[in-house]
Length: 158
Image (cartoon, rainbow, N blue to C red; front, top):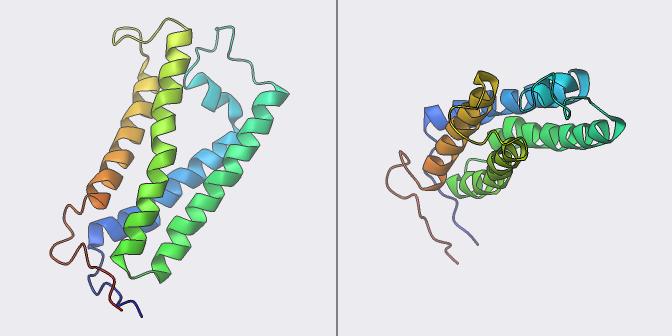
């Protein structure tokens, strides 16, 4: 039998991962379905050749929205039932695999427009980078055990 990690999740992480993080995800899911143009123009200027939303965009936006709603549900509901810090750390580590492609995809989009330089990035693009960097940083700190105190690496016991 495994012994559960008795360590509690610190309040900041609990609030961030069960309230704010799911709200971010649900907000983007909503925008993907109801305001896809705002997603496109957050990385492509409205007057640019790639700013028109097409049916192929919508297919991808709807699939992305479904994945984001799934993540938001796990964040906002499942984590509230899991008290084992190890479960939270595994889950948040897995969610990092959604944060890193956001950075990469944004860089690819800007590079395709020859705008991947500090002086050419627009404020709306800085916002996307800043929000993603903040969320990913909090997630990395949690996964690394920062602020979790002693007993973070509780081992399995038979």
